[in-house]
Length: 451
Ligand code: 9WN
Image 1 (cartoon, rainbow, N blue to C red):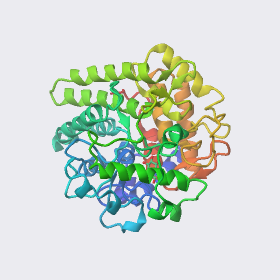
Image 2 (image 1 turned 120 degrees about the vertical axis):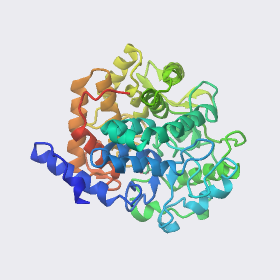
Image 3 (image 1 turned 180 degrees about the vertical axis):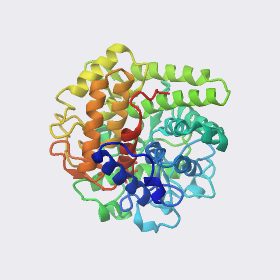
Image 4 (image 1 turned 120 degrees about the horizontal axis):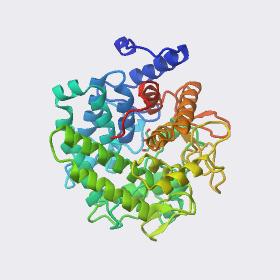
């Protein structure tokens, strides 16, 4: 595997050390067909993790980055959904909960189109995949064309977006809804607390939490929250994972999820163009989605986007990093960008010990510096926001965030997240997307065009 380390190196010694460390994490977490987020805590393939990982892997091996995305798509369902986990059959069932025997995808999901050849979960994660595929293509367009990479991926990614915008437009407002707190990838955010109150938790004795075998209880969700996650997943499974018949006890529109859909729709337009197809349906869709995002989720008073709870059809009164990620959308109204920029720089999100962005309002009633997604700062959201700042010409801020990212990634040994008040590393170490996005920030040209 040393060939991966032998590519031209950045000049500064510190960058070289960081690059080697990040490459080592990705090499160690590679299973032969894909990359685990963490060897201990997350021993299978996760959907949005693989997209972020591919964005970094392209700087080490374009071939491997392509394989990362294609192995994930081997788990795609016939209805278009890309499942949030594709299970590795070689990993024992008790290594992660919920395991394949909980989801029973090939059986319970058969009518919805779950593959017979792979066991997967039945829920989804944010659609970063088309953006990732386009960035992987751009890393070596010649090789990508020769291998027919986009020819294979484009129809699958288009089907994925179609699933989200047809089966998942549960609010009828033209945005994709999520039906489980694991779907936005920010599982434990206070943004879900109100909606989760309505969910009757599964009894603690009905399941065993494998996450506590590796993760610290103060970092992880409570047992009560886990009981609710299990109830929601069980109900969805028992409805055959069919969004037309499932009575979703939890249904919200999330700004980060939909912003990533917009950017990925733009990436589909770029792919269509590259493949000699008509890109306009994708550009039109991304423009329409941008209008819907602003109309349905923007809160001008708060200066950020909010989550909409579809059971009450109201905006949830919490401020989270999800509401800042839409900075990544290129055609946001100018005033909206200004307000987001102010909020990012204000007391709610300017962390004392790190340039990274806390996952939740530092002054909020539910802020917790350690428990994941209730305060800690994550590297994937920082990567997205610095990209958004750059897209809107806010280069100084983007550069500050990039430098903060690289410093924290190295100092924390590529942690899953850090305490925004002390900078202490939290969660898993040698976490794959932290390493992958480090490689991207070390190598990507700051002026790399947005799709
Ligand atoms: C549940 C793998 C995943 C990330 C999520 C993160 C965490 C899983 C868990 O780990 O979620 O999907 O068991 O906590 O919240 O964003 O994709 O890294």
